[in-house]
Image (cartoon, rainbow, N blue to C red; front, side, top):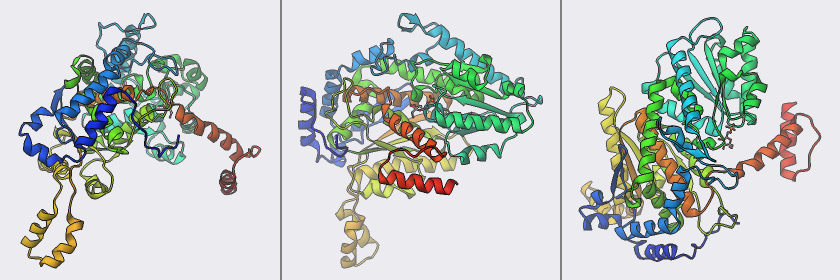
Length: 551
Ligand code: F6P
């Protein structure tokens, strides 16, 4: 398929009705919709599990929502959702259940995969993670010289890095004061070298996190970290106090030299990008403690219950997902901006990039047919207010329609209330500015009031007009805490699930990352002096340059 092709809609009653409705309201102005309906905020505002979603600044009417919900029903969303929670093998290309939701279930629940209740194993690992985290935090778990751990280095990539890295950054205000958290993901040795330069072997705990324990980046970084540790004066026996593993692959972990007692397991029904609720969240448990980690799981569980139980029209992940489908599939919007108005959420856009794009960046349906609609947009973003001084120009006056999710905690986690007021003012102002824009008449009046003569003003008008009518959601939480973070992330997970159902793609495989890995392995051999492979002229030229500079 040509990636630039604009696809036709599936020929089903709900898709067709939406396409017709889109033609009817594509020109409607948000300004007018607000003027015509004083209740618009209440009408398009949802509260669930402690979060508030204001979706009133979207190019929708109640009819739009009705049509979108009809689409969700036509696609069998409720049955698909129930099948996921029930442990059905909905990851059809890998024949696996998808049960990250079980990881945040409270004790006393039962979830079966292939006839076996997984909850006893889930709770047992959760307890081991909590016990270990408490031992390290209390200083009872010491390094080989008897000193308490001061630095934790998580070595993992993708789902074995982004979740815990994002969460530790988000929850720094709740972090243990003695612990410094480091995350090494890139095979670029620059990242590991910089971290190793800051830590000392006797007080450092390495977590090697890899679902498969075969990922080349992680294995390379782990081997270098172990070599560095031994070169610092420690012995092989000391490794047991400084290296732990998080994986589903016990055999590979043992091969690497990490004892079974130091391994925290999880299961093939936990996708990498959905794994921070499993032992992959060990860095979070170390940093914010057992209680904090469990509060994050509870927050996510509250969103799970909401998603499972709320009617579709009052279901926050469903509404968020359908709005995304509306812009992507009907307005052809190519990207989605994530703008957290919280510096602590600075890694959230990167986290959502994997969650959304690795899940729904697909162009064939679950049964292997070409999709009939555009699927996942490019997800990107930066915290506000920084983004305002970088890319917001394009959001306001560029040629693309780019929906924005504004995300903000109402209460700050620091003692600088003036800053927080200003931050929130900017967040609210940006969604309003995108929505109302500024007309030529308003610009003229403004310039006249400033004393500019009419000709000079007229020349500036086109530059200073804001088209407006640019959609956004605003997601508010009372504060950024382990619980609210869990709820927020679970909201996006379920949004991704819903969109996968609507677009009819398998959101839980990632075959698209394989080809590059295979070719990189071959080229790595060639760069190491192995025989040259068969390549196109560009690849050969680049390999020749890399070989020359390496020799
Ligand atoms: O990038 C592909 C991928 O398989 C991701 O889905 C996964 O999160 C990441 O690599 C890391 O995999 P692992 O945890 O097995 O090292």
